[in-house]
Length: 429
Image 1 (cartoon, rainbow, N blue to C red):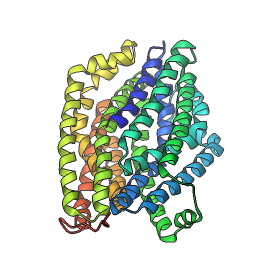
Image 2 (cartoon, rainbow, N blue to C red; image 1 turned 120 degrees about the vertical axis):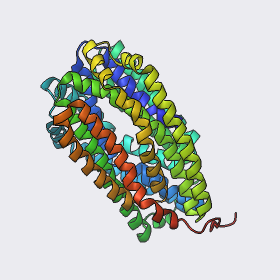
Image 3 (tube, helix red, strand yellow; image 1 turned 90 degrees about the horizontal axis):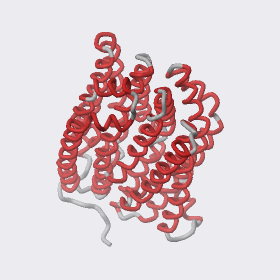
Image 4 (cartoon, one colour; image 1 turned 180 degrees about the horizontal axis):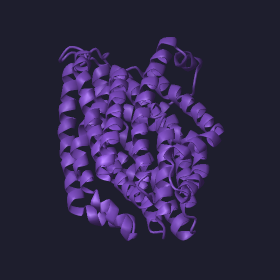
């Protein structure tokens, strides 16, 4: 959870430093630029989630050779995909800005952000892979250190470039680029030392083993499609926010940063489930599989209640940290209670995500994501013309509930596949 919470802290600082500039277009530009990269980079989120699932299962089964392969396969993919993103940046930028259709002022700032940050693509995808592998081998403390390094560099450079040098949105983008490259270099050095030996011919043969490569691509395609659905929902939310004007877009952007705190904080417990449930699944121990789900669920419910109480008690001063533009504050405060409700609704979808990722049961996740996206689009189509921005937030809240309900339909079959209660097939030693 601590490792995860450093990520929304970064987004909060990004928004806060430009939120005190004299025009809401700066907040909107960072919001739109960040959305583009969330969509672009997290389309490859399978490099994190799939890596954690396969690594946790290899860890639970005691297969050391596969632990190495579970890192090297997605690392190679991360570098290739990162270079492809850089090579296709011009049409990607044009399509993204056209799809969001913000005002000319906001789009101009977003384009500035995009043109700088795009060069971090290989490093960002490598960081996904490293973080997923470290979680899978239960090195969460090391993952926390890397996240703190990444986000700490970014926050310091945000303050220097934006408030010190006056670079505006470009300063936010340069800070993120420098942080992602630095964290990737440090992470590779740490993980390489952990692996303990140089690559050998046997490693290459294992990497190219047909059955494991097919399993990797199957899982990655499922997670890609699932993540694409989530990003389409986020993109549709921001695009509809832009339709209400720059002030509402900026207010919603602030509230989405608070939603990001909810998502990343509760996702920390989902990551714990990925690791622990995945390890129990790999060991074919259904009893342990159930136990870790119950324990993590109790922790998650407590965390969700705490987040709701914090937002209810301190939401208004928290919003004030982001901006001193009165109209933007007023817009965010008007819809703040949706964020108060969000943790209690969202927590169950995050937990179920963790269970299914740990077990690499990704087809169910893909199908649930398709159904949930359909729910969101239908709800927003019906409710936004009637209720305006409240209708948009209501649609988003029901969408989070739909994510949990649809995954719950597939859970009984997943539990039955986890082995016999109390039995384990993990090798001795």
